[in-house]
Image 1: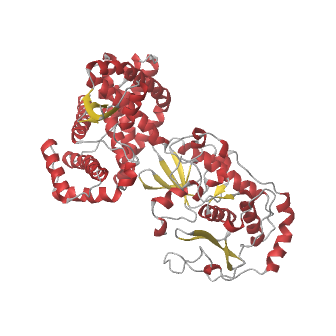
Image 2: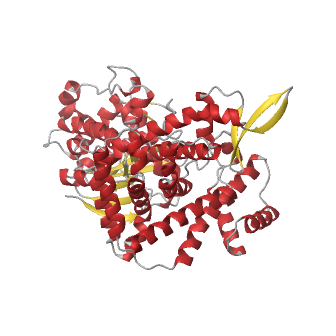
Image 3: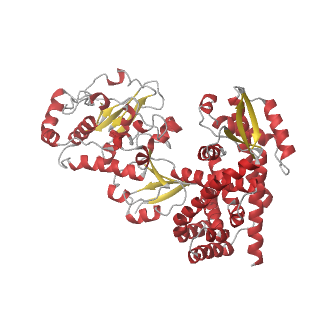
Length: 589
């Protein structure tokens, strides 16, 4: 069995070989969870294949150990280490097929040459991979490029190091930043400069020349290898191979190389949705986006006055869930606004014009004679779109019950485990606790609504009874309510500050002290019970400025802002009301 060390909320460092017992545990994870591995040595494709949850992804550190090398501790490098279980399974199968052709009697030099040849023959060198699933440049610069049989130099060097790690051969990933990446391998006690990228074959049937396999006496003087001025890199004392050494070793492995079949994956021919199943896409965030959209539609129906009586209980039942979703998305670069939902409503109802949310109300933007006109939706327009909103909400929650209700025992067990954890671990499980609590509360209070959807009453009763029992029996520690409220309010204030910063950037302006002073005044006037110091405002501004994208990136639509003070008032009061109500009900019983 492997050991799982909880590093932070949603992140475990995994040491040792993952077993079936470990997989059974992994499949119960309820939130998006990162499993950090130093490398894949000892990991089996047959075991990883058994991971069925979409909530888990791996970070294979390899040559990009961002915990121990500050050079790689930034999002550009970190994201390259990510793999989805299904994709990692295929990558491991690739390594295992190569390893099956290696004679255990071979020397490390011969094993290294065989693996080098396999990667050079199987892989096409690309500068950029044409795909739009992960961040630009990430796929081809990490192990995921193996699925496409296409890698950049960074991907080649990272993949080659992983192959060596699995074989137990000391190997180092190095790069001349923004130029080129390569490897240094320790063979027979001597360091050899390796650059598989420059030995990649270009046509089927072409053989690897091994020209760049540890033969260059001036390796660190060549283009892309000049790392002497990089304090984070080590310039090794390299010993080049002689031509005779290469030939003598090649003669021993030549037959195995000639008999080996080129490995080609069909991945490039998959459609986009199928590819996403193999790549570390944040499906947890996607699922939250769908849930957020359903709750927004529910709130719009309430605002329009067209919500059916049987759906009204869901307003209360989903309130704390909605607060969790916005909080989670705000902390994880998700879209906290309503743009996507309004765009969906516009498309499905063939509305001419654009829909925006302003002060909590839906506004229709239209143009007459070239002039923009902003007007609230009329009562007739609200009634016309309401049937589609009702249908969408009902369809969503039928699917929700079908997928989530069968997991109720696992959800309750996880929540119980968290509640019994020592205090020092509470900060590392806060997100999971909030996710589970709000989900349990939804099942406890949404039984009447689920029944109206046509779900069998006995199925609903079984789930809601368990959820209610959990909420009633959970023993809560006495907390400083004022402190908890203040910390919760600060989270929402941060969303407002960041939104204000983004608005300024969109207008092409610098965010000034005057802008902050005006925001502080607006918050204190409009947020009834806001109690924030000037220092807290400024600290949140510094954080927002450090995390907010550039105006150019924002203008391309990469950020969807939209949370305002009125939103915060509504959300915070809902959360406090439902928490108070739960506490009162628990005390009464």
